[in-house]
Image 1 (tube, rainbow, N blue to C red):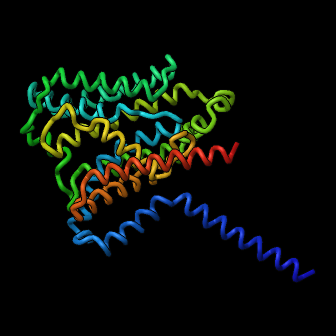
Image 2 (image 1 turned 45 degrees about the vertical axis):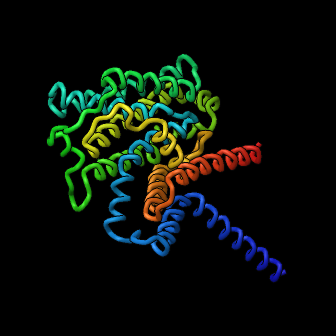
Image 3 (image 1 turned 60 degrees about the horizontal axis):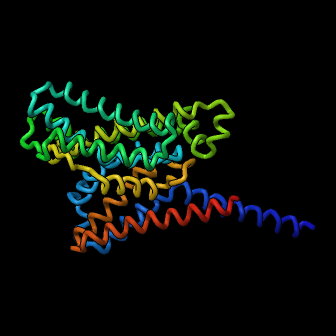
Length: 331
């Protein structure tokens, strides 16, 4: 009898270990993948391990990470925002015109641009929630409207040689890294607390996992939906400003659909479900780092950029297939 009991206890302990291991992998998969890929690249890709190259990856990742924070929130509630890349372009040309053509005070111009992104995002949320237009259609349509407006106000031209005071808002270096990296870290910390430590975050997860049950439990799903899209639009405008500062050029076609696709892919790599109800802020951060690391390796190895685009498409396709399989297993 004692032997039998000890065997049962041993089996239970083994199951606990396996369960803990699976939980750890599921919760930290993007971080583990990042470390694994970094080690492989360090051993196989020439010049990858240099300090300058790793600082370059961090600099290139900071601005997309900001956009990915907004996309993560939108995906968690079961939506999608295809207008992000177009808001980036609109914010870019708007900020450039305000500071260069009209000579507005830089804080005022930045404030107007960010407020514009907030209004566009709120408009997306209202169309989706109040008029009941699917998020895919609503944000794609609004995105192309915004893109058209950006082309109209710019006349299809770019604005170059922006004021040095404006460029200092993102390019000033502190401890080898530009201010844009520190802005990114602040935004990540705020969103981590917002999503994982507040009632707002719990309501987002609940709304994305089961909208009807959330409504019955008294959660104001509509308010959270509009607020989430407002955050997404606001962060996209911040990204547009920072990208403009980085390249010293305001461009109406900056961002676009390719940028949006990259952001969605990063969120998926980070563990955010395309069907709502699950996602992690730090996961999305490492998702962007993984994408930028892969892009960096492709450039160092001299491989065609089309391979990178094909890889991004493959990730999205695999993610959709795995989510469908999981959903079928649960039903």
